[in-house]
Image 1 (cartoon, rainbow, N blue to C red):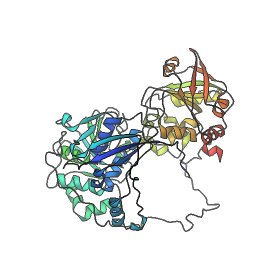
Image 2 (cartoon, rainbow, N blue to C red):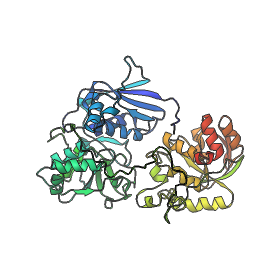
Image 3 (cartoon, rainbow, N blue to C red):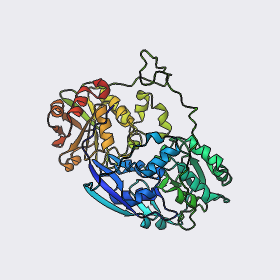
Length: 494
């Protein structure tokens, strides 16, 4: 289907020069995060341009754009150029190449210049990708665990670089090192060039190619541990251990630190740059293709085991709502706070069961409160501060609250992807007209949202009545968004 977004503004991130040895794309995106942070970038596209772009291979570009989600931007883009063409050709997909570059004289809404030669090894300190510090400032800090891989840094280039740092050496005795490659292709290449043997001999544990340690599905750090990780998010408790101190680093910093069990500068003894492969091994034998692909399958049975339930649909938005502020949270509440993954992820196909864990890190009784309100015929409202819904785009962070009877979120600001998901599941994304009105609400307050349907149909402005007086909220909605909310969400609109 189509993607529906407001016309964004475009910021040019001009890359000049070339990265020095021991510094990589992860340090570049952490540098950009240092400048722009994790909030305030809604409605922006970050376009990477400048002569330095040609020095970055496709996996490096993917690392940078991967963490655009942490910036909160609409998307991040690189040109489709000669580097892209070489990568696609090496993957046996030369015919898929389409040249897409900025027009000469293209104008941007804003510009930020990065001298790649001056970028230093960076890291994001607990508990936000926006808490940027230099590796130099943390040098010598004791490390208990190092996890390398994830969707951010698991390419052949990344893992081969780690192998070169560890070749002929062994990780420190008191540090646990795990590596998750990005694909079977990467593992095959590492096996053929000897990297896999190097990593095993160095004392690394090879993990499944999966969304695993990053979401706390396994390899959770010990209590109070310092864990260096090459993934993209270090929210509190996301690793599976709430007391863990997780730092986001480059594969180079991770590898250098693994040898001593302390934070080390990867630029001290850098390894040779890994060239982009001229040909990648292609093995599609494990792909299963439908004979009817693209034609649809009428009457096909969906087999559901005992832990797979039907996805609930929303109901049309009522004219008026009597509601309860089921929870009040602060700033930068992430989708990990709203809908924990890790050990709870196994319930993702069973919404009634998974919904029991909504806001578990903030209020373990949230589910019970919502269900009690729902039984009384009361709607539930979530009250939040700035940047509500940061992080991954997990739709369960909207789907499960919808199941619990949440009809609206009232926040100082809501992140773009989560806002779209709220609308898709029939939850109205309101913001305070006056952010100070946040202080007029306490958890458990009774709220009257009289005329909410008319507000959604109209200009989105609604007067909410609470114990401490009335206040105004607003939802700026497109015609399509209004239609979805009035229907009770995307599924209900079909």
